[in-house]
Image (cartoon, rainbow, N blue to C red):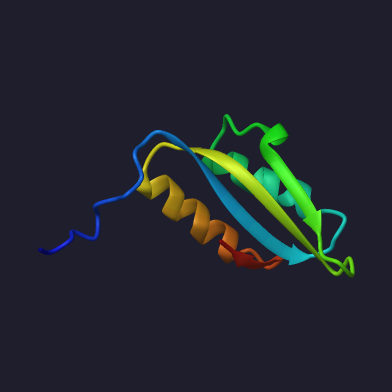
Amino acid sequence: MTTNPTDSLIEYPSDFPIKIMGAMHDEFAQTMMELVLQHDPEFDAAKMDMRPSSKGTYLAITVTVRATSREQLDNLYRALSSHPMVKVVL
């Protein structure tokens, strides 16, 4: 059985958590929130969880977006992972 690459295991719309990690920086959280809002205009900042690393060098942010399509998620992942402040997107 062959799987079509455009098929998705996610049912849309749904809430979808994304973890973003980068170096600790005063503007990191605000910048990530603004980037997420470009792809999910109804994003609620209350759904943003921030955790610093044990040494305070990095910040992990988990955002829960309202995913409406695979294209939206792909575009958001590309925007986040290509941002110079971001080290990892999961």
